Length: 266
Image (tube, rainbow, N blue to C red; front, top):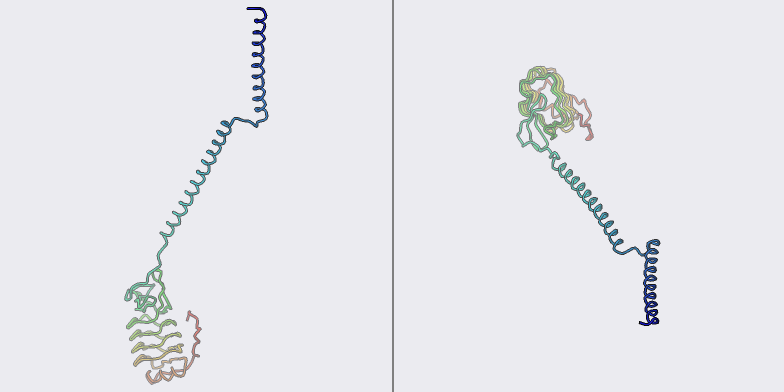
């Protein structure tokens, strides 16, 4: 090989080496610049970071939703349990049921009324105060009647108060209550039945404030004290009483007829 050819080959090899060196240096500079400016971060790295953040957010959201669902279910369960344990409304006793309240016995006559039957068991009282209403097992009943023979021959009784819800004083209700002295009948009484106070030898005063009294049956006040005075609310009632009571009974118009707004405490 001639000296000239050798020199030519050497130049070519040098040129190739120089080109390779420059190409390598340029690639290194680009990579370094991209790292400094943060604009050409490899897509694999960015995608991985975003996926991890999304997964974390999704997990947190799922956990929050699960907690909210659990809370809602717990609240619904509590509400359902509360509704289940609500005390049902009290039911009236069947008609004819006997019930005891205090010293007295009553009989259910409708869904909201009772009749006073007399003392309960061996109970005794000197002053019988007939109530307007009673409450038994959560149900309130109006006391509208004193039943037949309710207090017959009860010698302990000296005084009676019959309040305004009572419209009917039954047959022989106080028959031969020999120590009974005073009876006060409030504004609701409509009928005093046969022999209701017959044989009450000590009875001296009966006050009837009812303006709606419609009937006093025969012998209602027979064989009572010869000094008995009955005070009534209207002239019509006075006239009716005079026609039915013994001749020795004094009947006076002593009260004004009550208004329809009379207090429920009467």
